[in-house]
Image (tube, rainbow, N blue to C red; front, side):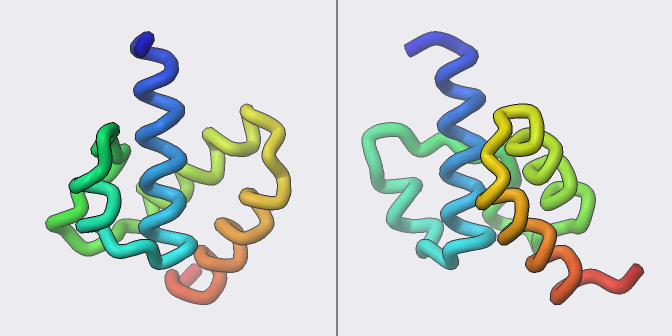
Amino acid sequence: MTTEEQIDLAHRNSYYIIINKVPVEDIIMSIYPYVMHNPGEKIKKKTVVNLLNYFENMEEYEKCKKIKKHIDDNFKQ
């Protein structure tokens, strides 16, 4: 697996944990336990914004819509 593929998988796994509420244990116990955030810490707005930026660059706008809603629902402006 290339570094680029690992980075992509880390963002996707973090998306599943943060947005889809997949238990972190399910990801950590998988064959590719990469994440782009520290699952032991509270999720920061900066982390979710970085996730949004990544999926905007990948042109995955359905994910962006869900991430934006998460930001609006969970972080003060």
